[in-house]
Length: 267
Image (cartoon, rainbow, N blue to C red; front, side):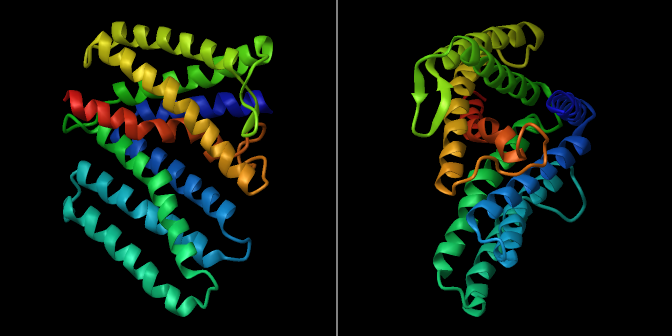
């Protein structure tokens, strides 16, 4: 089942990236929505449906407004992204007056944490894909391939050769040997991407590979820290044998702000 899930996952991701702007926006909008829901289910009580839905709505609105702007749909403009987010956030504050919650500001804080932790990186992915004014899959694909390589190589090499824990209290199974091995293979993929795509040069691809290695690894550890804080093993069981969407995209999500910042700087 784990292998079947992995094959279906890879094919879906590649299809969403290669098939054009609309499939890309829909695919990652769906991933962001599910990831926000999983995050909300972790940090809010099981019976707190209001704050779970609020987390998803407040988080996904700016993503789709930004996507509509890039897709040139009538009636959308860039300020709508900011204004829709502000209205949703301040409405959330107001709603706490009527929710009669014992911890209103904790609830608002957790919703905003979901926006920063999950929604913002996916918005930045949108900006990366449409940076030239039209949809371009090359950097998105490259980042995906490097994250997959880093995760997979680190897991396999760590399982085979790992003996030195990377951060035992947070993630006991992760080792320095696996992390270093994953990094080496990711650099190889980064070099290969520079030979395949000419939109950015070799140095830029290698720096993006280093960003994936460093911040992708941190992303994995940070999501492990989140789950350990709430005493759970997986963010959900939506992907049989792999856990939840947040489990699969933790490294990808966390490295996106750093990759986007670098790409913005070189452009």
